[in-house]
Length: 224
Ligand SMILES: Nc1ncnc2c1ncn2[C@@H]1O[C@H](COP(=O)(O)OP(=O)(O)O)[C@@H](O)[C@H]1O
Ligand SMILES: Nc1ccn([C@H]2C[C@H](O)[C@@H](COP(=O)(O)OP(=O)(O)O)O2)c(=O)n1
Image 1 (tube, rainbow, N blue to C red):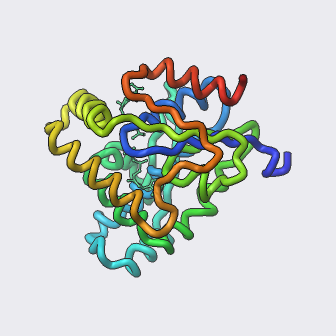
Image 2 (image 1 turned 30 degrees about the vertical axis):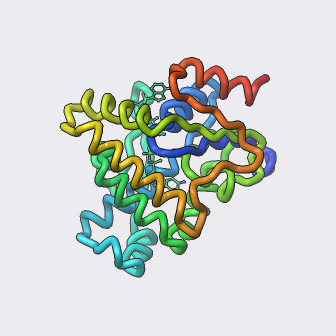
């Protein structure tokens, strides 16, 4: 199948809007591949932390992007593990520290350029669900299906609070809300590939909408 004929569903949106949860379930239902593009930026953030790099040193971060090997491994039960330079960094990747580092690194144009082909390589038959900030605008602008997920900042902070509390991480809702607002502002204001909906994206405000309802809405866009 020529690459352009392989369908892609892009799911973009801010932190905590449900991109990962919805993308994984929709990909499983469709039998399509899944790209968690944020995990790539997080992996560079974690690798930069291991190497003790300064988040203001763009040159070092660009070199780190080229030098970092990122692998995805599916384990029995459907869980996806992320390997950074051969080490399982899945849990470290999900921390707010890694998210904030990813958001800072993601503002460097050369880092984004270096990750472009790695992301496009996920487009394989029978189809791809790609989640991130610029999937519908920059990485897969020709995707036939595009969704932009949102939810109020308060609800996104509450979701993240529950998620982290279940993992035994001690955080406060106020602290998470501040981090979410700071990350929203940074992701939306950067000059290269800022967070914004593609013109042809379907917007879904998930505030007060359950996961099953959102999955059903998204599936109805792909298979009406
Ligand atoms: N529609 C929803 N209603 C309630 N909780 C949700 C919804 N979508 C996602 N969640 C929960 O919110 C948390 C964050 O979701 P996640 O998929 O990680 O968001 P994102 O990838 O956009 O940051 C998870 O614990 C998830 O189970
Ligand atoms: N396609 C992408 C994906 C993520 N990023 C950046 C911006 C985000 O704040 C960080 C982390 O993204 P990730 O999707 O893992 O974060 P959330 O699950 O939404 O909290 O990476 C990006 O710039 N472009």
